[in-house]
Length: 102
Image (cartoon, rainbow, N blue to C red; front, side, top):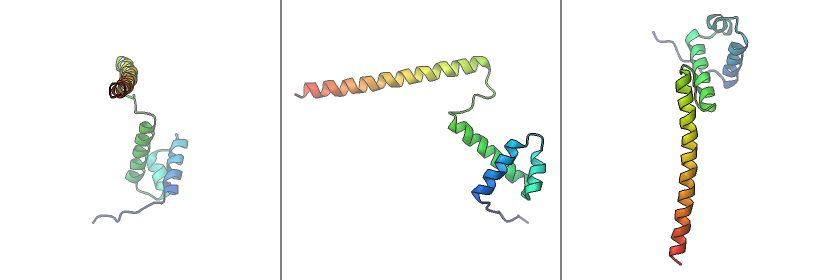
């Protein structure tokens, strides 16, 4: 028999996540039990929150070697420079296109 899925209010989820983050000495099992929710529900909330935070921070560099982190930093810098170059070229092309039609 499959258990009925419960919808928890966002405030409850937020409070549960705050409790997890502030209770480093307590296990997820203990916290889930004290809140009266299933362990996997709390685990999913924590996983989703971590992914949301990493996305907000521009992605996670966790698990990368120092060489990979250096390369990623270099590539991000190069990507930014190339975007700026493309923007300058786009504006120059538009300017010269206007000049030639006059």
